Length: 236
Image 1: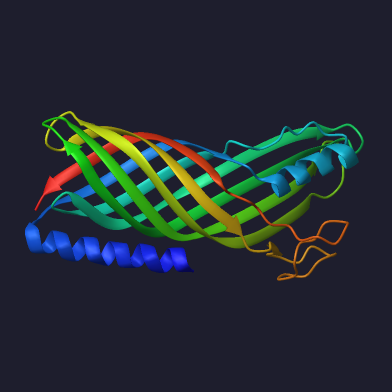
Image 2: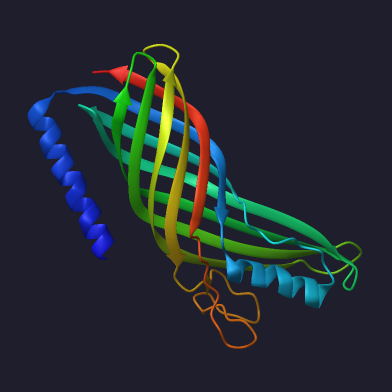
């Protein structure tokens, strides 16, 4: 909570200082793709449990793919706006015990506020630091597709997570409108307890997801992000 309050105050102060010293001069849109490197112990506890109980060969999930979108207003050397995106990891493995294909899907949709500041700006190159905070809407699903006969078994759950990211990047402007950027970020985030999003015959929608030892399913999304993408910049 303290981090969120400090970041909001930081954004307000930066906005006020820049408005007083320079005029609004641009609209910036970022499209990025890359990957996250996360330390999700509980997520990999699920894959390890599947391997032990179903005879599958899931590998640990540490590097979900990541898409990111941001729309920002330039105010002097600062930019303030909103961001969203999509983080996902999908794995499938054959179960020789049950003669079926098991699939695991993880997804995260962030939505938050973003702030950027240009440390250095030349004709074609800019060095930028940024920070963002908001909410991630998380989904974790498993399904079973028998290869011979039988009904599919679906497991669907959801959770939320507050996140904070901060990083540094660079943008090379091909012309006044289009640029190519690369960035490296650190993210702090941990989810709430996951809950079932639908009835499956054994669990009711809204029930907490628990392991056999009674512990709750959560995800630690602390980690690093690496992004490459495009910047579109219009003067106002």
